[in-house]
Image (cartoon, rainbow, N blue to C red; front, side, top):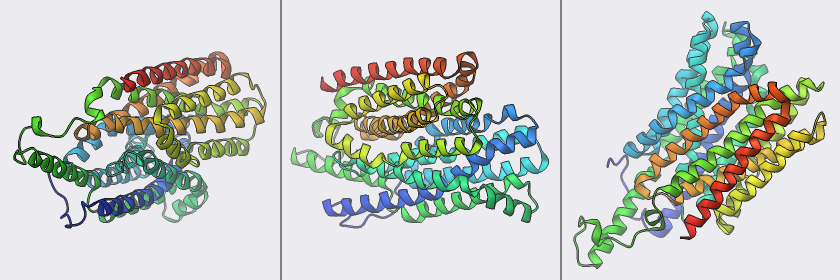
Length: 433
């Protein structure tokens, strides 16, 4: 196992670990804020840029789809890189790849080649994979009681970029004109700067690397236990301490936890993707669409620390089940709300809140149910499954909406919600055993 940085003598004491954890969470939160600025800005302009470059507004929805595809593809490779080299290398590499994607988008807009534009937007989706891995990095040194809280703090930091980012479209157009670029691609210059700053914060601030440090602490604890039993530090695992809960429960619960996160994310993406179309079909303005999506995003991230605290106090599974109940209320609202703006907006807030509870508590479950040595790989699989499910149901939502509007789309989302509840209940039975 490579050691990226030297470890100070007192860094593995209780106080040292707590101090390092606090600093790691602060660094990850700051990097996520910076990276989120770039993502929020580019997602807002991506759809408009696709419509302008291709001349076909019907293709504009592929912007978010390509972003989700890029995040899904990058999830497992970034997790494997983290397992080999640590979080610092993996997260910084992801930031640099996202910079490459933004550069490709700018170039594609200049030469007006749609294929390059789609590839660039997919590569830019790696920035979303970085944010997802950052929330897991916040759990590496966390105690079980504080794991959900620390993870949720990093999730909450996405709020700032998600809210401010879309407002950079105007300044981005001004910058694009000044640099001689396609006006709509100017915002991607902000994305490049934001991703570079996020990478620098992680590279210089995440020392020692929390994942490598956590492994070192676990090895030291194992060596001490072996010595207490009269063995050598490198003695086989038969002389190691009693297996943890994650070791005893097996892999089935791990994949069930991954499934419940993916199902919740699919529901959120599918309903959110068709909300602008639903509102405009009922006479809503572009400004109304923007307000609705903004309050939905606030529901997704703003209260995530409360979801983390609740998961730490009451357990992740009750929070997941509550989240699915909230998602069910949101789906019912969109199914029967008709043209009522108040009902649709309330449903979108509930959609964000339900997603938040399922995602925060579900990610905590994935971490808690997985042995430490396997966590990066399983976390990467969770991120990939989550984004893949969102991309698939997001694409299918257009067909479902065309067939029967929000009632049909919300009914199918309801089936996914029932599956998520069933998976959660099954996981609770296995966890009790």
